[in-house]
Length: 138
Image (tube, helix red, strand yellow):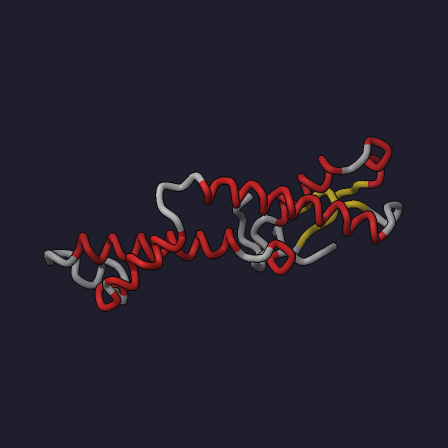
């Protein structure tokens, strides 16, 4: 869910995955609660589920999300390392901040490509972050 929030982008998805990971007997212990990170109400396990079990559900959700991201990264047409090498090969051009600065020059396509390349590297870096450091626990 992409909604204005304080920065916990995948919070809604993590809550859904934790719900899916729960045992059938635990489903009744989930309740709607407002999440500052998600920016809306989400289903979260309440205190009827032990703190250690809530953490286990959260960890499983994070692990699933991390595994899905890693799988997608491995199937991308270029690797993170190749993208970084391309940017390093043209450091002066990579410093451009988009085509708006010089929209009618021969450099515009190169600037656009470098902007796209930088964004792709940033997304891949985000996806390769250590899953345990990316997400707060409930």
